[in-house]
Length: 616
Image (cartoon, rainbow, N blue to C red; front, side):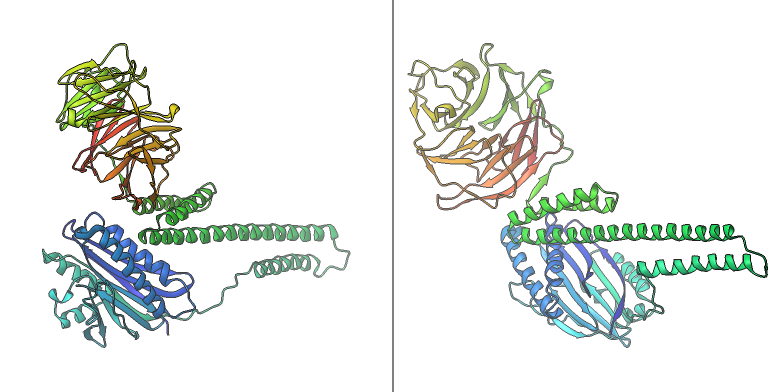
């Protein structure tokens, strides 16, 4: 027995702490349907992603392996959802909200449903109201535990609600509402919900009706169409000839007959040509339609893998989907659908990769107000103050104000800087290989016990020491700050290959960024194992690496792609680093450097003229 489900839905979310999603899922390979009502309370930031992970998992797992029963497919889908939700809950901990949900499967005349927390399902049969989700909840750590199954009968009415509906109306009142039809009942329940100023609610109402058998068989093959057209135009030509020759004793005019037959043949050929072309276009459209459906299915698969922490596989799938979608975009078929897929790819990719896209960001500091020709290079922090610098000037930033820039030196070109927190000193590395200090408001050249300083491409500091990165000599030169000068250089690097090194940061360990995105980790001069697991994005264009002793993460600047990639710092040498997320600044140009506060709550992004501040 097959049913047609007449449906209507509504939702009322009182505030941003309540997220509600109502969804139906179908698949061309089966008549089975999935209906989902989800409410998430107290997780305003990630609620949509969590809800989508449930829906995507249902779509991938349930609409697969049609050789097993719908109940078994449903059971397997719920197991996968429980695993994914458990992973999300462990990751977000206290930030994870409460999920109230009903998931129902319709297969022929069978109904299977599950429930969690406050969500409830009701059945109206023969004007009698009953709750069919009672007893499905559990104290288990799993979100969905039990499944209720039953037979669907003609004229059954079902309600799936994320909150208790009986607080709005009695059993008999709800039955009476549905006697007027699903749409009318939903409208009345909507009004009752709105009048209850504290209730947030999402509901799906369904009316099961028997499907009608088709009344006629439509001929659809191209062969039949051509044959029909052939008979039609052949009869036209034959009738024309008969009409012209009827009742005549003299010789007929064969020329006119031939013209008539030729005209009929021409019409037939044109008709066949049009039919073939139409058939070809239909076949092409059907092929692209199938491809579009496949791409949507692949996106769902990628999303599921992402929530299972298989980010590499998920991004590989999305890369292929994007390539295929752009190929469809180059044709004249399904361009709106292809554009929609590209938008969905970015949304899915951002969710999987924990991407925060910063929009409409206003400058925190405009350095150009002090120097219109400024071309800032870097930003550093010292004693809770920020300093931006360019090749010959230093800009001190106090709160949201920038002071008049201080000249560094007219003869030197600054290429890097570092803050010596323990010494309350800023140190600058110049292109010629000299060190300049900013100490107690004074700028001066620093001396070393060596005759000259070693040159390099970057400078970093830790404690009373400064380190100069020199990839040409495959060395990191270490200097200690003494009372009036610095010690002579000592070779820090023992066994690391520093060729193509471009940036360095220190937190006790020394982290080196190389061209192409590889990162080295050194401790006491020796290279130790460093690996980033589940790196979801390409950092081959990265230009700077940043951390401090107080920070839990490494921050990798990829200025070309306008983003900062964040990875964790291993707690010990045996642990790998892990991909954490990325912040993308689509609207910023000429990003030069970054600085992260010790609290790791705010990040400062420097362009060549402005400083931007964002929450992280």
